[in-house]
Length: 153
Image 1 (cartoon, rainbow, N blue to C red):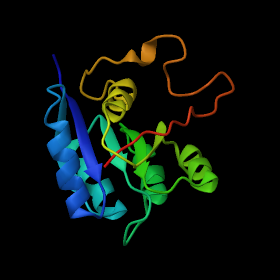
Image 2 (tube, rainbow, N blue to C red):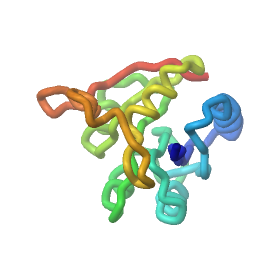
Image 3 (cartoon, rainbow, N blue to C red):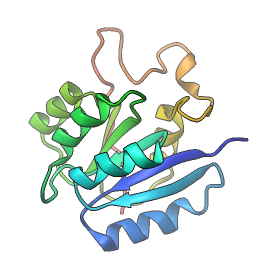
């Protein structure tokens, strides 16, 4: 079985360390790289070609929303889930407009994050996805994102 290749983008070293430790328990998810800001995220995504990027919002140099727009312009764009402490409607709308497949609010590490990763990861490296089933594309019938709150940290 192919592993989901994940790029983790967050300016908090401690958060990245804890999340990587948590994700090690799941054999189908492999963190292939880390970035501390949006500029680094775009560069690493071009180099590593992840299936999915977990993207923080507020970071130095380039914020997550601008980075998502650049990632979505790549020849083979990765899926992106915003992972942030900010539960603001304007951030959710910005994430949707930039092309993010999901928006997860950090609160406590949870298996629900893993489910979101599995649901949205797709096809860059031949990883099969649950996105093929009805309603499984991360959007509701009106073309809007299904925004989910998840607990993490």
